[in-house]
Length: 269
Image 1: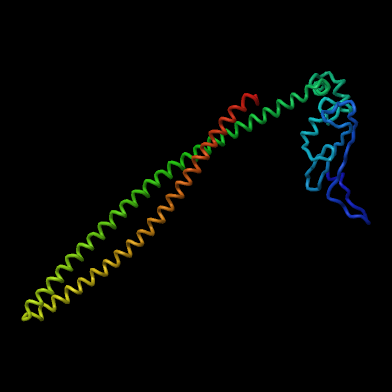
Image 2 (image 1 turned 135 degrees about the vertical axis):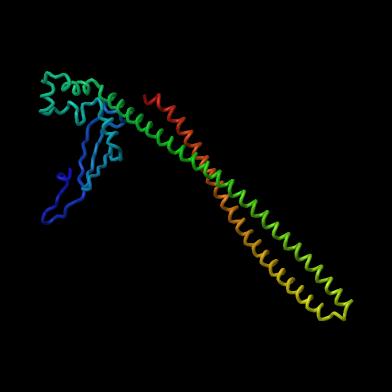
């Protein structure tokens, strides 16, 4: 079709498209369109694309073919007889004459509709197979997300129990050290003769108390970090639940699509 596009001259530049239109009268209503005059047009482009129009309104090639059905117009119609069509009429082979007779009898449009219905049915079968694959994939993801959710919940529970135990142990040790420190101070007040030994014990108890206090601070920091980790895990759980809801929605949509295809299949057949 590129040969019908203007290639240009010495004084004029070439163009990127070519167009043609055919105007026919429709006073007798032969064409199934509410106009007394019908203009069918086509534009071709250098990249191979085409655009069709009916009365300067964009349409599909299928619309033009359906418009010309049972009118004798069209690529394989009998309004314009070509040499090959004369040979087909005069041929002894029924197969060569059948196409022309079917077009004249108005059977061709029904055959085209049957082919279109067959193609839609094949596409529906392909869609059913794709939907089965999507449903299988979604079910696999749902099971995987459920397992991950269970593991995350168990991890959070064990981590919380561990932190509670560690904090309880540190507090118990601090209480013991406070009692020892209080006892040492009382002994120091009561027994002034063993002051040096008591002072040593006091320093030791203070050092142990300071060490336990540092451990308490570190435990508190770990608790804060654990709380932040818990928040992140909770956010991850929320995202997993959202993904699970999306997966359920996709599975529901796949089920509705399957039901719709099952309803359309008898009509297509």
